[in-house]
Length: 307
Image 1 (cartoon, rainbow, N blue to C red):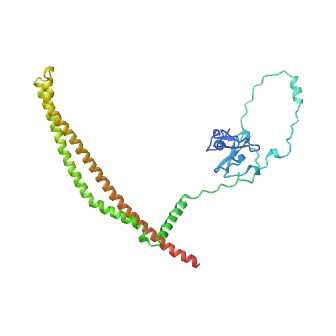
Image 2: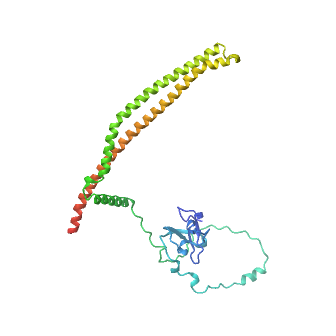
Image 3: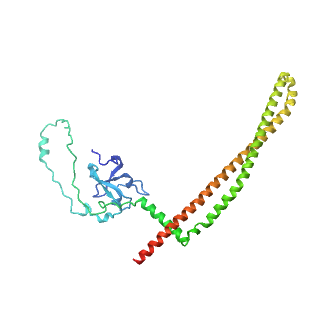
């Protein structure tokens, strides 16, 4: 079967079993909330759905082209085959059955057939929503422009056209924060330098204590204190050195945490200054836009009213 669409596969669609429909729809449209499955399309169920597509073809499979289905249409407005005249009866030809009964049954091989072209089925034109043009989607750029214009108008109206009062409290708070942090920044930098100097001293002390403990341990080994009978004397000899190493290690950790905390405070102060300065710039730029908008609005509105 030739491909009926470049965007969908045959496994993506399903034939509607509604009486008189004979259209192929996407399988996702057959799901009904609260039910496991459904064999009728949203058009036959009379259910609203998003804009989609469908294909003609019946049992022979979907055929191109596709048609748009933009919205809701009550299936009661469509005349179904079961509401028309009675079904036609097809007479049975008994001549072939009589002739075939007198002949021997022979096994015949199926004759391969080569498709010569695409079979086109007659399609009746329907004047309903199945073939109506789809509703055009709104332009995203236009929607963005309208939203920005609406926001400008609301801000301009809230300040009564006096743009110098727009976001006055926010601007004052940002300027005060910039001034405070600029004044506090040198103090934080001096504290960081002091912590760095103390950390360097603590690191040197720890290295000296570790070297002393290593030398004492080596001297005890050379003196033969590793033997079992001298083990108690060795532990007593090394106890003082171990205590000094432990104290130096704890002091080094404490100075390291203080230095790290000071570096974090310094980074936060610098970032806060940058943010507050940017906020001041943004408010001033927004005031300029409001002023330009107000000048345009005040000129255009009287001209339209006079016209």
